Length: 153
Image 1: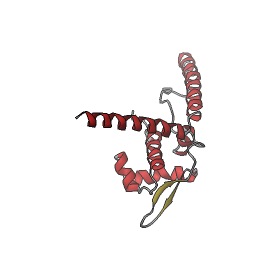
Image 2: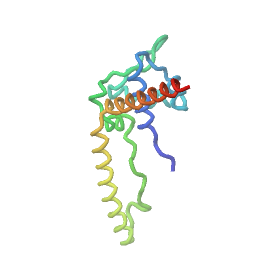
Image 3: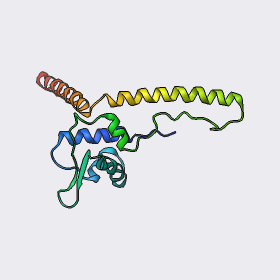
Image 4: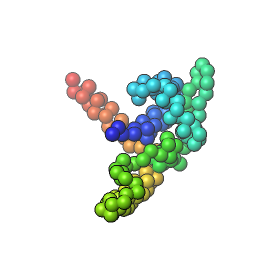
C-alpha cells in the first residue's frame, strides 16, 4: 500500500516558503516535489482555504505564506491537506457474523483509536516555527562544517 506523503510534502514547501520572500509558482513547487503542478495546486488549495497560504495569478504571482508559523501546528497542516488516515490497518469485514472476527475487530479498533489520538496530540504540540528553527540550526552547522573543510584545504 502506498503511503500518503501530503503532510510531509506540504511541510517541506511551507518551510521553504518561510525562508524566501518571493512567491513560488506551482511549477517550481512541482519540480521541488517531483510531481505535477496540477497536484500541487490541488493540495495547496486546502492550505489556502485554511488561510495558511495565498496565491496570486499572473506575472510575478505564485504561492506565499499568509500565516505565523508560531501559530500553526503540524496537526493544522494535516487537517488542511485532507487529514489522511494515520494507520491503514483495517478490518477484513466491518460487520462480521463470526465471534472471533468481532473480538479481533474490537481489539484492533481500540488500539488504533488510542494510537491515532496520541499521534494527533503530538502533531498538535509541534508548531511549524519549531521545525524551521531546527532546520536553521542544522543548516548553520552544515555551513560551519563546510567552511571548516574549505579552510583545511
